[in-house]
Length: 480
Image (cartoon, rainbow, N blue to C red; front, side):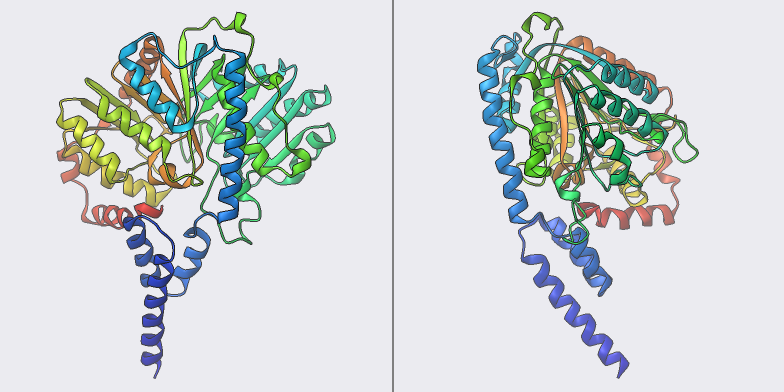
């Protein structure tokens, strides 16, 4: 009798699983991954799917899309007002197809004459950020996946409270899932001083709405519309201190002074206005943007590419593919997670098969066990394609960078994994500047001194149990 009941439950579970999965358009790989979860874990698998497998609701997706369209219209007006710092053409005409391509992805223009500083150390980045925040005169806009109110978070929060009390407009947008331990009451003083703190739209009442899988993974700061930050560092102790779990945290972040700050400001406004209640939304005005053409004295041309599950375009993934398949000499990548989909794998194979030097650097330790084992699986597969895999042993490598030849590089929040391609809200800067590329190249070379190459001999020594864990983790890679 019990066996019959269990058989019925399992059969009924399998049928309902199939119907549930096929109700919503999705990749075949994701369908099979979710079917595996639902069938292998009867009942419990449905709870996992309810919270992590359902897409964004149509109303929420529409709100995100309309917010983007509204602010992009404002950006078009800003370009007309400040033509000399926004442009549509590079001096190097050979790279013009890239500018056109990235402009079509997001309708984000090319910005000229930016000054760029690169940070690869968390404390150095934090110190520079705090100093810039203290100098703010008009506005501070901050957006982080993880804004944790530990020692590091409180250092930032203290400055924000002080600036708000001085009359500076302070707005803080954070993802509640990434900011574990952070509570709304932590921002009471900031709000009393006139500032604002807001959770991102997808993390608002997400538990009640049964949607936990869509995160604001961006790391953006814009100060007075002139100075901005973008990259991989979040705000929490682990990003600036050497910890027992991660060791030294190795990441890459940019500080930008110039018109590219306006692009990041526009991205922030899109995300803020779609997340905040109507009374706290902000209106477009020039004070938020870089319009001082006389102070545009840098040499770096920058575009910004953003993507998220509110769009089917997967813009950042397309940007990665464009650079990888266009390379003539090299593609150097740093990523904490290497869980690419078939299209990116094909791009990497094409590049390596065309004689391009493809190097990928990954960490030697996990912060998410399943993703780490999946990363090892894909690393094993890629070395068969003449792709060099370097395993960083100097701590935890969290940098998200890509260098193409000596011409273009990307630095931002997006990893080389399916989550960053499809599920997270991400942002990355595309930079055209040989000097910046040389700096990133030197950082990569310095990191290589702390790496061990994954060779066929090392793979051959992996235990059967480790290979099994990698294989199992790989099966779930479309939904990790």
